[in-house]
Amino acid sequence: MLRSRIFLLILVIFALVTVAPAAAQDAPPPITLTLAGYAVPREAYGDIIPLFQRYWLERTGQQVIVLESYQASGAQSRAIAGGFEADIAALSIQPDITRLVDAGLVSADWKDDNPYAGFVTQSVVVLAVRPDNPRAIADWVDLAQAGLEVITPDPATSGGAQWNILGAAGAARRGFVPGYESADGAEFLRALAGNIAVLDRDGRESFLTFERGIGDVAITYENEVYAGLLAGGEYELVYPTSTILIENPVAVVDTYVDLHGTREVAEAFVQFLWTADAQRAFANRGFRPVNPTVRAEYGIVDAGVEVTPDPNAAPAAIERSSDIVFPLIEDLFTIAEFGGWSEARPAYFGDSGIFTQIIAEAQGS
Picture 1 (tube, rainbow, N blue to C red):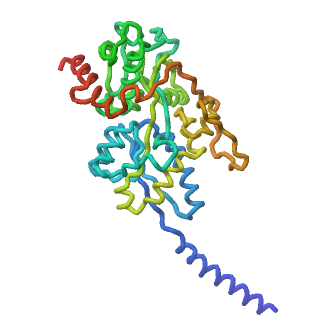
Picture 2: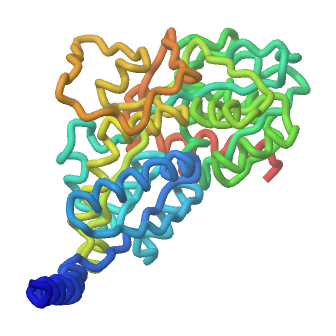
Picture 3: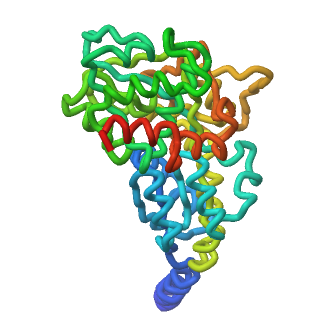
């Protein structure tokens, strides 16, 4: 009897020794993704990437290593077009993805495989002011007052800066900047440019400049102000009466995922960004979510959209933050106000664009 038990024990040990290495050999080797993003959502992706890694490991048994690169949206887009082999481009404005389409790196149908037209987050252009708002800034028109120092990024490199300038111009075009109404908003942009103290290369660097105590007011993203406030920043958030809806795109870089053999996991990562947990992660960092369920959780009500809770939904990995509120904007317009990016970008930021010329005049060049 003892001899039989010893024999069985030997068989079990042999099985463990032989089967375990075989199971390890059957596991897919780790795979590496390169995420190229604009600077502002770095922390949000820091929350989301571990969620995706766990999701993919449970689903496939494969570990995903994500290499991250962040810089100004325009600079990031140009880097990818110039040979930086990113698998995923998460940028600030659609034209920076369009550049990659024109370069033959991203498929022209990049917006068609999801219900969100390729946009993963939203925001709005807002104003950040010093505690107790000593310059009494309540709306766009107050940015033209004499002696005011305004902080905003450089639209030559930053997608965020282009949103900022178009937010100001659109408000003027739509009659919400008293005394500066015009068909293109140029008169107000000229007054605004005369007060711009610093033009940093990207939205994150620009807001850090404001946090260091430079300037009276920063034109920035709503989410950037929230990020600072949640980190203990001392300033206040002012919502203009009229402002622009920011829409941030994401796309798989087809040429490079095929080169790297990462298409399946890259496409899964992009799709994961629209899941409720990933969208809550964005929202908890101050980005307005696009997923209807999560939008409803944060009090964003869309006309004609009825959201029914799914009783079979898995428990949330990320809960809603009670510190984040997305108020209704009285006059919220989109890039369509300017005929879309194909018209807005050359009209305002091209070599002979309205704001390009205004800045050149302000700098005396």
